[in-house]
Image (cartoon, rainbow, N blue to C red):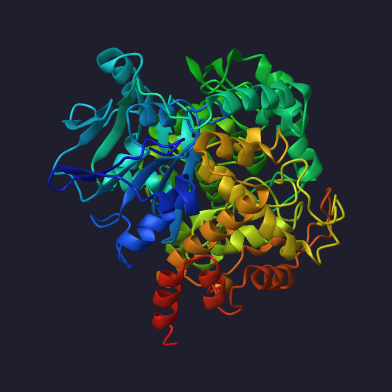
Length: 623
């Protein structure tokens, strides 16, 4: 057995109920580490191109990393993978909490699903045993009801990840929810669960994750917990406020998109009401994921709309999506919006973007009260915002169309709505503005999961990385060269994600954190250079998946207003236009991908040990 791994995959055919265990090849761990790295390699190899994302042949995987469930600080992460029903591209989503640890302690590194169940089911895992059970009584329940049932009927030590009504109704912006709010949110993979009639996975385990060198692992935990508590990198920020502390700053410095990306903070009077202190007035408790020394999140209690609500506190992305995007500065309503998304199982980023899109369509007369069920969608009206969000979650009225994202809604409404649909490839953009950090414009377009902010930019490099990358700072006019330096940041992030640790822990410790832990846990030497190479390998397999699907991200239209076309006339990012063509060319050159299609070149794939993918892709090209 390899340190850090349980060395067991479970493959579940939902169509006939059969299950098969697999002992993975050690080379898979060595070359791809874990998480969506392993997922990308397996799905490329074992899933034919062109499958329908909501059909039986899409493979849905839940995968941990080698540091998940180990003493590594923030070693809590787990990934969901599959072909995205939102974009048709490679899809993955990442979450924290306790489920990933429970999955490993139940004896499995990963579980993969194929087929479609005849009736709703859930998978129960316990110490190496797996059982498909009827979930008909759970179908239709929201994610809170599901969680309460798990704790009451299966046991308080059982952890579950599943879907709410949005996923059951195949909303393409549906998320996978754990612990009433730890969300694997992006790529719409909750809809894939719904299409397979898989309500949840529940796991209980007593097994211990093996460690190659327990003594060294213990010493490393002490070392890096000390870094976190002493304030390395972003540690103090995450420990003191978590991401909600950035909510007012993001609005004021121009990072948060405002009024559906169409304006600056100058159009958002009262933004200061989003101060962290306002959230603290409603905080119920401070919380942490499994054995995490950061404890960056919490829960809130608030009276809203005549009822008392207890919910996860809204993270920055959520608060911005339902705050600055809709010109709403009412914190109780943000808590309610987060509550609704977590109950129904929606990606808060996409859901907030859909509501903002609907508000702008309403403003321009493209939809009216007859489309919204009588709700007057006015900017800043938090009651209308949440009333319409419920419509979206239930797939009612115009919300039925928006549950599949802004791209499909705009296609239905016609050309007049297209400028208001801020997406790339079908994925709504996150709450970080390329006019604030231009390199994000490249990542949003060209990463295999489009419209994702956690893949790379100058802010997502761990302290101490020995790079020659210039410090671009806030000089947004200086964009030349940014495309080139995305590669190293992206490769580091891919390996960090695959390892099963949290981005917040990675940014709160020196860059040696991940390789030193991988060395001690696995027993194989691992360096920062190895992080770069493994990350590059992961990036190329994910990209190869998309190319094989016929995706050409180079030709995807960008949402012009998000890229400063035309530039904003006021605010912190006034006059900024993202020089996307120049930076994209730099990045493609650096990655060794062709300029016309972002096709990984044969020599790059062969250098990374991906000869079979090179043969497959280039044979398809007729070369």
